[in-house]
Length: 250
Image (spheres, rainbow, N blue to C red):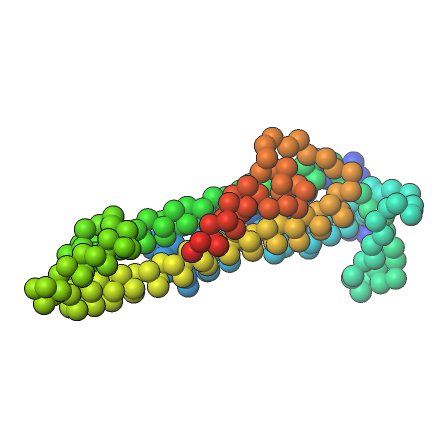
């Protein structure tokens, strides 16, 4: 009779913070550059890689629960316990009440918090880049058309009207409108997309948070600030709330 393979007695690994595979933001992703922030295609690919952690939340937590079940870390059946059934062909029909160790939940939560914070900071950085680009392009278009940068819409119209006496009104205004219009069309589009990304972040966080809380039912993190409180409660962060207000004016 073949001896069952497995770790020697007494050498079974303990489920600790390193018990699950960490698939955090790839180091190769790095930080966003201005060129990435101003290209919708590059920015979306950047965020896709940045969101890799959330994509595997359910799978990795299920693996931890399976390991804890195999090691005998389970709770007694209760109506208050989260009931789960194995999805493997071997365990079809069996039920488990696995417990994810507190240390694993704490480590996993810190990993989520770090990824969520970095992603929000990346979007906010790109918002700053896009806003600055829009202002600079508008100023350059105004300067090229002979219009003093900083003039409000009414004074711009007055300046163009005055130039009509010398026969320059039409060409000056057309030149300004053409250049300024193209700059605003692109950068305002990027601003709207970037504001939308913070809303998308809120949705993704809530989805991952629901999975996390279902697996780590008794875990309670130490929340340091308003942003962490919002993330734990599944609400929009202060940055996302501000972005929603700004998006209405773009």
